[in-house]
Amino acid sequence: MGMQKHRIISVTAIAFLALAACGTESGSGAGSGSGPGSRVGPEDSGGPAVSTDLPLTDVHWTVEGLSVDGKKSGVPAGAGLEIGKDGQASFQTGCNHSGAKVKISGDTITVGEAPSTAMSCSNQLDAYEADFGKAFAGELKAQMADGNKGMTLTAADGDTITLTSEPSAALVGTWTLATLKGDSKAGVKVPRAVADKVSITFAESGTDAGTGTARGNLGCNRFSTTTKVSGSTVTFGRVTTTRMACGEPQMTVEREMQQVLKGKVTYKLNHAGLSLTAADGASLTARPGARS
Image 1 (cartoon, rainbow, N blue to C red):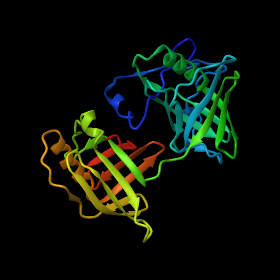
Image 2: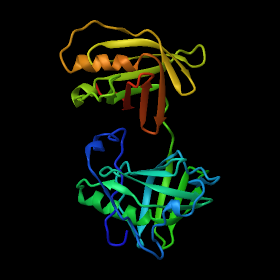
Image 3: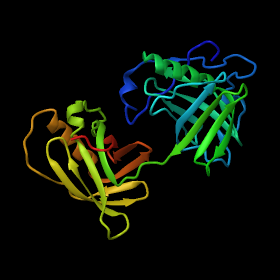
Image 4: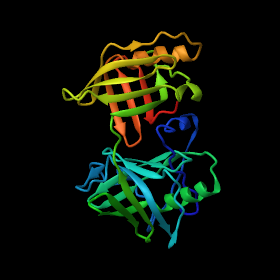
């Protein structure tokens, strides 16, 4: 990144979403150019993006410590790192939203250029983003610790990033609406006051494996239904609801919610988010916990 500031990611589930409207800029990143610490694009070395036995990918890593130029950097709450099996890394800091292509071979991670959003942040987040960008650049050595629940990334110049793994969320529990897209493929604008009332609670039935129930609030009325989980799908039974009449946008949200909670639906979980996608494309994302 040289003297340039490197912008990193701001994801939360689904805040993972509020930044989508921001523009992007292509940053040249830390250490651009040649020599130690310079960025080497993963595409330069050919072969698969990930070739390692280390449990580095598809894990949410929380940043516990960051040392740059021999000095510790303040780490904001929620700062994290994720690396997919496709070699795409994403970063969380609480402000900007960014990712990078990486190449993993054995215990070596080679970081490529990282495009980012360009939101103005607090001084603390600005400083953290700049330091993280300098440390997460070029070739890094990964060292696992604590039964592979911890990891330290070390750059050639001695900069280090200390991480701990965070397990994925479980489907069972309560989820609060974050984004909603109906079968028309158009996103539904859901005011925060309404979204915070829309929730789904999944519970196991205690009988057959995979069977259970779902209940919650659709935006106006409360609902309940049966569920059957198999692999990456959850099949909803007949949805029953209360019969209150509400104004807009609650009723629009309720109609679109029912489009998602219909029949066999694909679900995906990560450390802090749930997505449900129906066969006709209707979908939602949700964050853990209910705010009513």
